[in-house]
Length: 121
Ligand SMILES: [Zn+2]
Image (cartoon, rainbow, N blue to C red):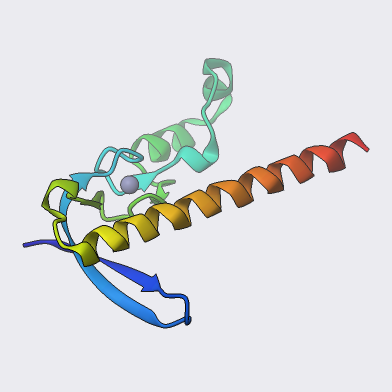
């Protein structure tokens, strides 16, 4: 069975590893190819025709692809199989993971707001 490792840090600051049932899914960022040239941005058709042929060829061959951020270049991601998480420990680990994600989202929102304020003044 495939499992995903979640590191839970308790109130005392102790780390604990919990393994939860998981399954491999095709990475939606790169559609399973493991590479992405998204960092180059999208070309408009005018910009594309301005590029020389060598570049166009290499680009189409994926030469400018970088390992995908979402999956680290493997083309697949481990996603937690919620239906098979039955023990209290596993559920607790999922709650913890969700909480961490919420904190991250909150921090990003604050950073965005600060960046906006900096831009205004
Ligand atoms: Zn990917």
